[in-house]
Length: 418
Image (cartoon, rainbow, N blue to C red; front, top):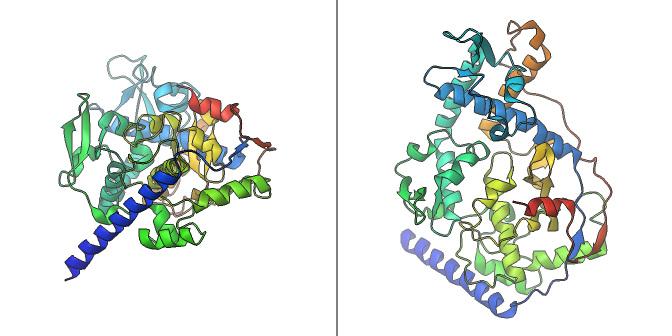
């Protein structure tokens, strides 16, 4: 009887969602909401976090590369062309020498003039602890990766698009072979190796937005919409000065009233030029960023998934159009998009166990940078290594409010470049 009730409820939800989509597909063939063009506002707090984590990510990637090396070390020659790949603004050799508490330099066994780098004992301990974190969070890894694939049109993604996202999604090196009961490697229509979802897990088909609004029932949401209230509202945190603007408030009120299509529903029947489709795109991007550990990722990584996620060609303009939801950073010679709700007073909200472990790694990095002139003798204790400093997120520059026009801001221009 319980199974029958669940099946019936699932069917009713699906029918109700389809009715909502059909209803607004008929009513909103064209955009009806008057939008406001908002000038990009720099947030020094979030930029600082992105700057720090860029170095942390590079150090972790170097650590993983050394672990994968059959000889257990990397030569200076092998690091020569890795700067861009690691996202660094300085040469890799100079970067790795900053952190003697993680990387030990020694001469090559055969070519004495060739510098080599291997992991210090404390770096090996941290790596072993990281493997333990992966083991302890097995179920979370499966859910996170399943939800990424569930949002795609064919329930699969090319491995070449997933590998750059390993750091952001908190995936282990062997994620493509680690869970054979849930994912399998197949050949895509373009000939590329893809990771495909074995079976649709219905229990995962609930978005973060639905969880936050504590209402995953489409029929109830539709009734709320008919009474003039949005069923699912995006949390918004505007830069200083935006919230009081009447045009912005009116625009966001109308936007929030639109029904929210789940990122796990098939939306190919919605008019791509409608307001409803725009809100669906916002929802997909919001959900994807919610699945990342740091609630952020690089613009190019999202671009590589555009077709799979059924996003429009110039979807990156969404980030500057909705500054209350997203923040677009131009830090470290790249474009990074972050969820504003993911950070509060300079700290990550609801930190994942893996991010807390990476905080330890960063503490060892920072200690090595301070005492690098004294070598590796000064090593930090592992017990109490979390940084207690808080970064303020209030240092934002002056804003400008105008009616939306064909022009684009500097951030929009950067986000549209290839």
